[in-house]
Image (cartoon, rainbow, N blue to C red; front, side):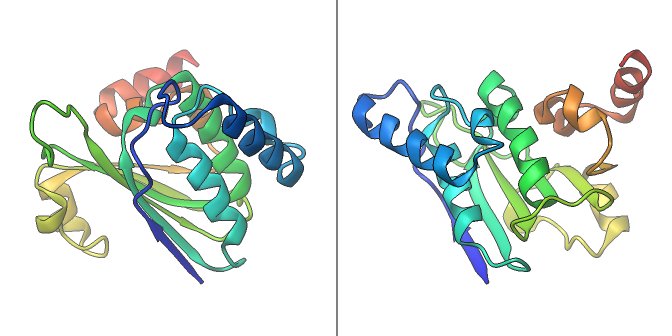
Length: 186
């Protein structure tokens, strides 16, 4: 009913995961995801494999939330994976903030993602929220007025073409003017 996790922050080129293991992981993904397996690439950071497996074990109406690094929002492998998520779950939200939780040597920024179910939907609202405060001080998602005061909200429909054309990192880091410009250009 619920999958909650904080997968390891290991880059795809890390020697911690050998090539043979990656081959096996990708072979299993291809078996499970016949149509969408190409959206999860060999160059993906390890956390992407955890997302895919988490969605496999999730019940049809279950909830899924991960705390991960935010790098996949802006990478080429992440852009492909974002299409995978659109096809395979109801995206409720991607939440970022301006707080650094690790010392400066780590240079990792964390996000929280929230999904429902293991089937893609088309007309739900997808919230991209960037809080001006740390997650521990963030307002409830039900409190729109406080959300707008303590952060920035971009809300799009899951079937919006924009989710196929621009990386989610742009959505979560841009203001309404930039988002409007993207809509007009694409």
